[in-house]
Length: 302
Image 1 (cartoon, one colour):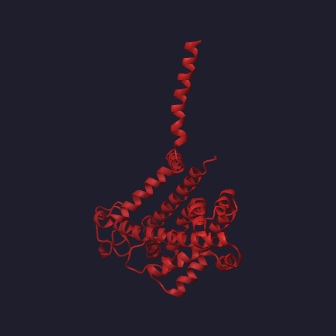
Image 2 (image 1 turned 90 degrees about the vertical axis):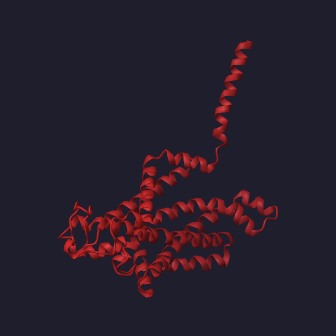
Image 3 (image 1 turned 60 degrees about the vertical axis):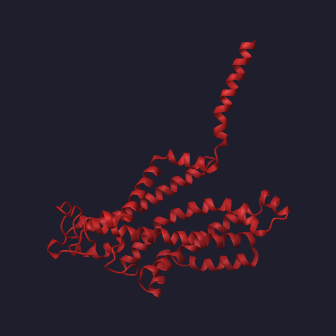
């Protein structure tokens, strides 16, 4: 009996030592573990990291000057010695222009969503927490933007402001603030009346403390996931603005603008002409798949 009881106690102690680290793991550590097990998400994250590094190091990695072309080598096919991805309609190296164009395309895809995430989350949390007339003013104002499709709204704002990088960022930011504010307001409304918020309010905590300590922690995660799903949409809209001449101006390389300049050469060199569109497609798809993986990883109940 003594040996059996000691064996049972030792087994229980060993099990406790194994279970204890699992129980002590924090929420974000668990999210990272679940995300790391998702091979598709990690593959997309690695590909996006590679694209970002390529764009960041483009001045040192690009084999040619992206703005300098040789007319005698215009529309060279893929595999041409010295121009492995061919050349564009002005004889400029496509590989160099794609690498440099990724800098502008990624900035135009990420920066508007980041600004909209900060502004939209703030507006949504304020509207959802305080309610009343403040909620009506903020939400009814955002409803005005929902009356127009995102594409038409971005084109209208860019057309009114004029072409250019800064105006494109402003127009895209204004397009994405309303949906993010709507999501933040909906989540805040459901959180503000929960028991732990009422308990903190009963102890005398002010509105700022309640928002900072108890509300934001439950709102930022879902809103962040939603915002990451908008990055791919923002990249496509930014490319569309540049394609229409409402984004960046030539000769700055940008994937959407490159599509515009190459559209008349698609019958002469179709594979070279679709390269910018292929880069937009791959990058947008990776952002979408990474967003889906992050959403699944943060859903701990699953």
